[in-house]
Length: 541
Image (cartoon, rainbow, N blue to C red; front, side, top):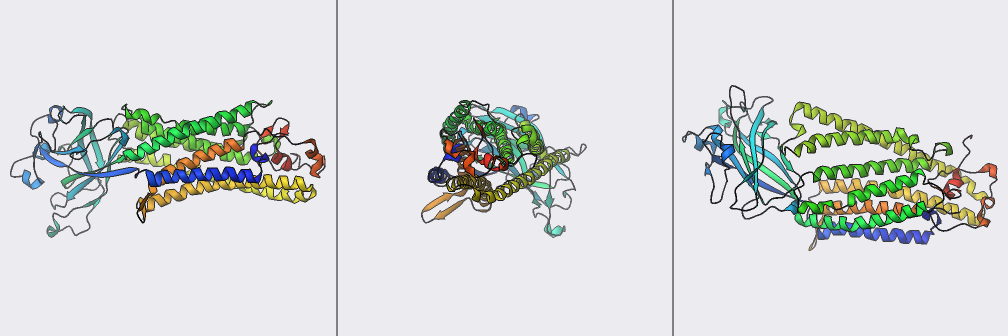
C-alpha cells in the first residue's frame, strides 16, 4: 500500500536528503555571519540648545542645530540666566542623521531612546513620581535647502526614574542623577533623507507641569536603525526562499489531491504550516523602498505571530496523531485543550502589539509603558501569554513522553515478525523518533543562538575573518525553519511506491486479533500508514 515518503525511503536516501538540508543550513548561517553586516546600528545624538523667544514658535519656525540657517544657541543652562532666557524659550534641537550623512529607505525603521542629564540642586530636586512633559515636533525633508514638513507634533509625558547616590548636601550640587533611559520614538519606515526634532520642556507652575523634575542640563538621544547591507541580504533570502517553499507546497498538495480520499487532519495542518511559511516569506518589504509604509513593523509582527501559532499547533497535532486512539484522531476538536492556550496567548500578544505599534502609526512617540494603566495592561497581556505558553509546553512534553512510551512498549512485539518485515518496521520507528528529535533540536538551536547573540559583543574575530553573530542568528534561524517546513512537506507527502501482496498483514507474524498500535499521522488510500498499522490498538482495550 502507499505510505508517506519518509516511510518508504531507505536510510541511505534519508541521510542524503538530511545532508543536503544540512548544507543549506550551514549556508544560511554563513550568509549572515560572513556576508551581511550587523543587523542594526546605534547612533548617539547630543541635542543643541536653541533659543526662540517668539510666541507659538513651534507652528511657524523649525530650529536647526547646525548648517547655514542654524539657530541662536547657548552652550549650557547657566548661559541663559544673564541673557534672561526663560525655560520655555529653550528648544533642544536634534538633526537626524549627523552632518554630511543621509538616511535611507534601506534602514527600514528608526527607534529612539532618550537620556536626560539632570543635575542635583538643593532648591530644585526631583520629586517622587516626577513626570517630565515634552512638547515634541518632528519634521522631514529630502533636500538640504528645502523647507521642513511637519510629520508629527505631540505632548510626550515620561515618568522619571532617577537615583542620586551621593549625599544630598551643598558640596554635591551639580552632580548628575543616575536616570533610566526612556523610550522616545519609533517609526516603521525611513522614507526621507533628513529628519528634525525640536523638543521643548514647557514650565507651568500653576498646572504643576515640569515642576520638581530637577535641573535638566542636556538631552541625549540614541537612534537605532537597521543596516542597509543587512536589509539587502535579508531581502535576497526572502526572495530566494519564497518560490522554494511555494513550489514544494504546491507539489505536496497536488500529491494529496491525487489520492482517492479526502485529506486527513495532519496533512491539512502541514499544508497550513506551508501557507504560513510562504506568507512570512513573501518579500513585500521591497515595496517599502519606494513607499512610505509605516505599518510594515506591525505587519511583520502579525506574520510572525501567525507562523509561530501554526508551528506550535502543528507540534501538538503531530504528537497527538501518533498517540491518540482511532476514535479521537483526525478531528481538530480533539485538541481544543492544547490548541486553546495557543489561541489565547496569540490573541493577548496581538492586542498588546496593537496597543503599542498600532497606536504608533499615528503617534510615533507613544509607548504603552509610559503610564501606570498602560504598564499594568501590558503586563497583564504578557503574563497571560506566558501562562498559556507554559501550559502549552506542559501539554507538549506530556504528549511527546506518551508517544515515545507507546512506541517503546510496542517494540516488544517486533521479534514475532519475519526478519524483512521486522527490519522495515524498525526503520520506520527510527525515522519517526529521528524526526521528533530534529524538531526538538530546531527549537533548542533557536533558543541557544538567541542567548548567544544576546551575551556576545555581536561579532567574533578569527584571524582576519569577522563573523557577525547577530546577523548569523537571524539568517540561520530563518533559514532553519524554512528548511524544517520544506522537509515536512517533502517527507510526509504520499509516496508513489506500493508494497506487494507478500507484505500484507499476514507476514507480520501477528494475528488479526493482535493488531498493534503505534499511532501515526497519515491515513492513505487503502487505510492507515505502516506506522499506524504497526501500533494501533483496538479502542476497547
